Image 1: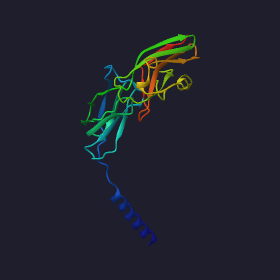
Image 2: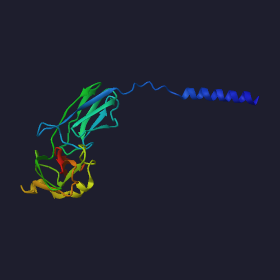
Image 3: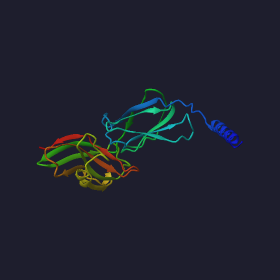
Image 4: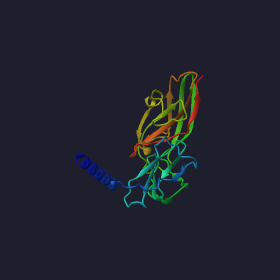
Amino acid sequence: MKKLISRILLGVGILASSACTKIDNFKAPDASFEGRLIDVSTGGSFQTSTGSVRIKLEQISWSETPSPQEIPSKMDGTYKDSKLFKGKYRITPIGGAFWPVYEPVEMDISSGSNHDFELTPYLVIKNLTQVLTGTSLKLKFNIESPVEAGLPKILDAQPYVNTTRLVGAGASIREYSETKKVDINKNWADMTAADKTIELTIPDLLPGRSFFVRVGVRLDDSYKSSNFSEIIEVKVP
């Protein structure tokens, strides 16, 4: 009798478990979205650091108040996500040193969707030059602002140095980068022409090595973001 009762209870448990199990019949995400970030002041790629600019997506075909998801940008100013659900999205670039985008793009995303964003940087770094004396590297550059009114305060400037082309915020050798930061802490209107020409010195680079170098100027916006130069290669004899 005990064995019979046990078998009955086991059968009831299995049936109850089966009744509570739902089959996930959602299709796997197979839509994709990619594009470029374009610097309107130069027409070229927007100079960024890995993940500093993100593409915020909100699937408005799914919900009126969707939870946002983000695509991090790459250092070459491109972005891509190949695992999205098909639908209509509201899309906004965020996080970098550029004037905010107040009018998001709304578009349907499916397989192979593409969109390029034009961004206006806070600052443009120009005329970057390098002078290597022994193992000491001196960098000199100018900063310009495409839009001066309302520009956030300029906090500091620093070099970024690494042994690979992956170089920027979060990807640099600290002793050659963060420790060589130069404080500025000035509003654009208070800066003289001399203030807008910046020099940075990186001493004691290892001989016989190649380094990849760029500079960044950080502003006091909500993201504390930086505008970056292009990357240059420095070979130390």
